[in-house]
Image 1 (cartoon, rainbow, N blue to C red):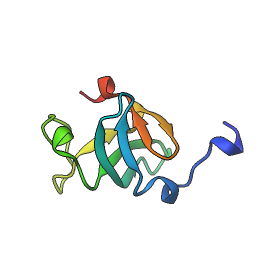
Image 2: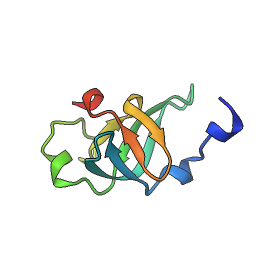
Image 3: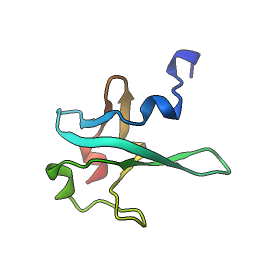
Length: 87
């Protein structure tokens, strides 16, 4: 990974999460990670859309929807995820 590939968490928070087909899922409200290894586990959706709310996704203790970080394809103007990997 080069310096250009690295992103700070504050650069991801608030970005819109979309599928690679363009379906809007919501915005990133928080990031859950493993403290010992630093591995990113989930994106927490702050404002889920009606589309994503209908899916049976994992939720945190506050009932917020979680997107597995392993489904993230790209981070730029949007956070792009593979919908097949989260359903």
